[in-house]
Image (cartoon, rainbow over all chains, first blue to last red; front, side, top):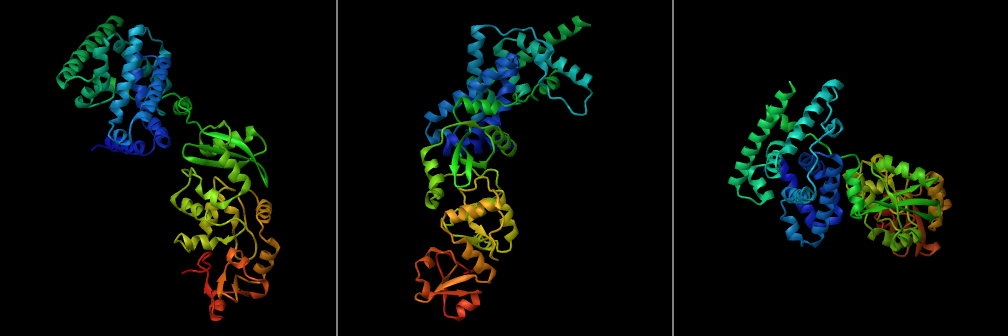
Length: 192
Length: 253
């Protein structure tokens, strides 16, 4: 069991006892992760925050309707990602996310205290380019690539989140990464 | 390497105040209200874990600032639940014990001290050393004092009922004069407590029951004045044939 899994089962056990008393812990434990996951899918800070917030509000409402044994048995991480993903899909259906990104949108790349400001800006710029490239990728490839290569989830967990066979997930991750690589290289060469 | 670059996108934090906004959106935000008490208006804050703060403050804005400084989260004005208002206004110890408290800012030791202080009935006092002994840390008398000074919910957890054994009332998180006001208001004979303390009197005994108590124990108040004996030490009381009270537990078992 990894440290991550241990935290997950602790949070699930706490929610099993008392949702109201432990909901804050759920938000502080997974807030950054859910926000990062959504941001990497939509590449827009404002949309990402809205969706991340809606995700936790929906989670709170759902938890209220679950009996304690069901709450204790939850794979919380995958469950939250599934809720977030449904919301991302709904929005994507309503309107395609803009593929044009300003430098500002890339600022959430953590600044290293020892790093020169110019180096941070450069890194932020390359993060922005990367997010832009991700955004050009179809959602069916973007999602598994984000989960596997950014968030570091296992194929089994991604299969659970996407409700797909592991084989499909693996194929889509590889295909997505290849498409991303090709797109990214083309753009970079074009810029040279 | 693309995979390495992708991994850097993981280092993202949710925007400032994200958790607070989510909690507010589901109605789990911390609330506060102003309550009148014998020592003036105090702000009381509560959340889903229980009552989290009791703070006197000159103004609402000063309270909000102090609260945010100490607890590192905001609180919004709310309507005080009726039960909470009743308990604060009546100072009823049994009811205060039934309330839930959010003591997450306290260490395990501090929590044990505060839980023990909660057992002291209205109008009675216990020495710092009594708490130390009762929680199984007889040598930690000074630490008991520090823990009580940090009590996040004074008045409700009655740290004002913990006093020095030398006849002085000692410090209080909300001010030493306020401690006198509160204890007098609860019916403690403060002048007598101080007089006897200075004279070295530590225990009262009942000549009829042959039981000795801490001076403010309610069992002693039932004894007729002419039957009350005073003792300076446990040895003196035991030599006179008295045994310790089971309610106030004046000495180590």
